[in-house]
Length: 440
Ligand SMILES: NC(=O)c1ccc[n+]([C@@H]2O[C@H](COP(=O)([O-])OP(=O)(O)OC[C@H]3O[C@@H](n4cnc5c(N)ncnc54)[C@H](OP(=O)(O)O)[C@@H]3O)[C@@H](O)[C@H]2O)c1
Image 1: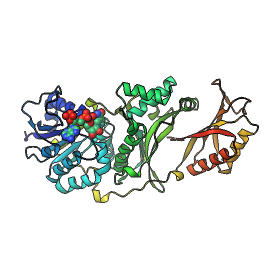
Image 2: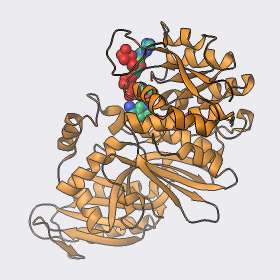
Image 3: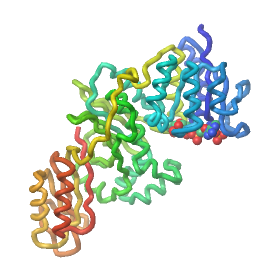
Image 4: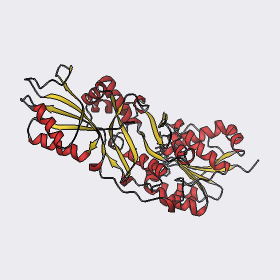
């Protein structure tokens, strides 16, 4: 049997400790599959004294991730510290520059510095594997990079943040507000004390930027992603979506258009019949629309120590086997620069919720303003305050009444021009709610 692959593990938290445990428990299986054993040679974390429930006897301790990366007794650095900057960045760079391979679960770092790091990996011959960085246990990186290496991808989209999907699921199923569900998610440990990175869509954007690069051969660029979070979604939108045959999900969508690659993260209405609409709670899912085939959807746990460690181990197994694939599926000098797509040119269907004033001719005014912008209405529903749904009836005599519209495909700037005109007409109160629709 070949010499063991010697690992240096930086970070012994939720994921790192589980990786050490998994190597201990699955070591024989791993060795049988790789034709070579995998051994933890050295580790590091912030605190050497902390009790972690793992056996570190006989394993060297490094004083920093950088010291670990420079240790000549390791072949592969496993970076599980996290963060887009130091100390992870310098440690990974040092490891790659000395020809070592690197496995990381760090989406923030790959989204920001992935291209530069891939260049270093290519130049010095090591691997840079990051399967756990998107969708944890879901093998989406490998699917795009290797499984679909010969398939043109037209669109890749998914639920990439369990916290947001948990909140939207509870809001839909129990009619609760965003704030109530967020509080519960924090209590259950699904959301951070500062939840903004998740609920404002930035976590999804980082993951989407990585998927877009793999799917379309673009340079991973978080700044090219349009981002909108879920905090403006109200329970009445989820109820309306359901009545109209849709669910609302926070989707990351990367799609090939005539004008380039559009990358966007926003609350999205998806038909209930789609696979992605069935994904509830903290579960993640990604759908790939490949050339000449029906969509492929992968569903699974997008976080958690064991799920994430499983993906980290799969990356380690590839390195042990001697598999070297370009980190983004093609040489770095073949990756194209991508720009942020202007959302005003986004084309698609829209859900619009307006609070119509109790005035004669309100419905006609709204219809006229939409028609002026050449927007066709697929359905219009007027919801009465008692919760009943009464399609097509004109406004009653009481308080403002929600009017729900679904449009056929149109441009986003046309929608906003029409809504500005409706607001100027003073036939609605408050701000209109607009949610983009993603059809299959
Ligand atoms: N948790 C998940 O479900 C999940 C899912 C997918 C991807 N990931 C990614 O996996 C990575 C690790 O996440 P995690 O949840 O395991 O984080 P974590 O529980 O916070 O663990 C971080 C570890 O890094 C160590 N560390 C922090 N700063 C350090 C420093 N300056 N020098 C040395 N060690 C340092 C900590 O040491 P101490 O223990 O001594 O404090 C800890 O062991 C992140 O990139 C994360 O995005 C996590």
